[in-house]
Image 1 (cartoon, rainbow, N blue to C red):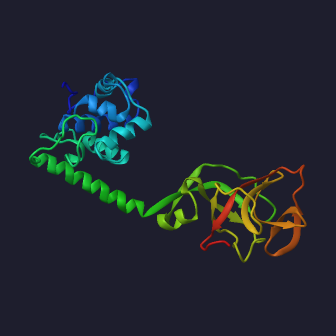
Image 2: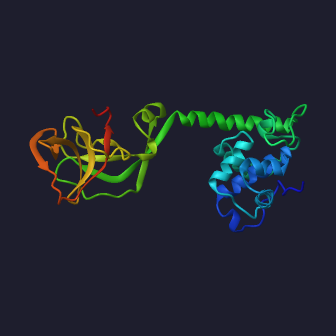
Image 3: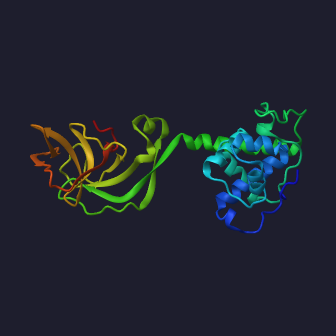
Length: 277
């Protein structure tokens, strides 16, 4: 099987536009070159044609995300591990391991009747590559302990309303992954700053508030980030005689939400240095 050079990338072209494209290509070429799997076996596993695999290895095609992840699975790697491997290889072109290597270094049999992949042992360079992947996994495991949530430019008023609705990310706040996943899907969560005193003592002026934009359904007496007649608020929503009302925690007056009002629940507020009931 003819494979691309491990020392250089092909000329720049539409197939390898981004750094992620180049990292994926580099990792795939490295893994295929080391293990020398049957291209038909690899193609069948990924659900593509053998000719398509050849074009990918030659740098003439860049597969979509789902296909890339199936290639990574073929080698028993996560896609993130594969990209990290390619990035490491690109950073150090002098490090070109030699010696046999196959899917996850021959820990399982072929699913499609190709080569079994079992070999007697690994060379020193292959062991070095394994060590590199272990280091990558260790760093990933540490990172997985925490999940970063974007702090948005947008603000929520706990008084007269805010017109700041920008979605630009100012920075990121880290939350323990186990905790934040117990509250919902972090991909739908953002953090905003809240100003005003109408929600004290529940939410003090100047607080940062974690908002789950995946929870937009009305639940009685919960606190929400919402738009009401052109203004952004952090308020409690209540039901009074079958009518939806906007309420403050330190003001008995209620704002009735009428059908003609511009009203939208952006997300439910779930934390501000403490969980919000």
